[in-house]
Image (cartoon, rainbow, N blue to C red; front, side):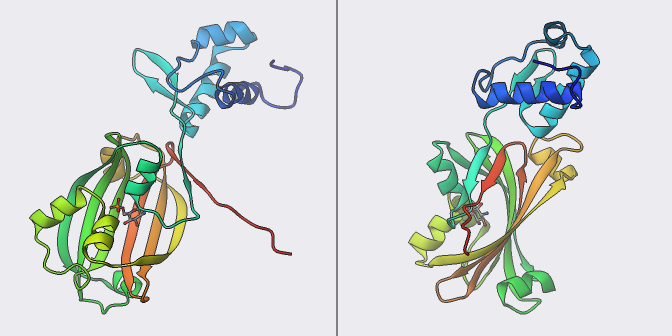
Length: 246
Ligand code: GLP
């Protein structure tokens, strides 16, 4: 219940209450949230306070609004364990979702200094720049931009690449080219979606995203790819297993 004498703000108590109902599955993904009026009457608090709590939960991704229809409980965030070096396709299949891709750009460009350093090549060497929207059950989840040395994937035309990239890049590299992707370093940071991400990930101004950079290497130590991804922060969370060494 809401404790009006508590030092915790009332909107925050309501937020916790709704969050608990979602976590305990009293409210399930897709369920309609009771109206602002119902909640304000039930807890005897102002509609403005209710709106404040709901706005925060929408921002955190627990709830989403549909114009003219109401406020609903979001699907649970995708969880990705950062333990293994998996591909997007594998991650989605593990969750029982259909992986998909929308190829935005594919060109051969001269590597700039940053990309060259990540791929251990010289600035000016040719790399493929591949930009894809990654989909789960046809919904956009991330935008991914890969840089791969043209030496590793020889003689690719736009048509062949389009076929390869409608499936899994890792699968193509491993089963067709016998490359062994073995290690990667990954950096994750929070940001706010830019206009390009807003458009392709169906976001709104001010929505948060998770920026991920991956630099992976083959078993012989050769860098395989340098990748920048922007994931929808309302749909994705990362899990890390940690161990205390004393
Ligand atoms: C993940 C990684 C990328 C990698 C991609 C390969 O999304 N963040 O670094 O390039 O998987 O995915 P797929 O094999 O499905 O094309």
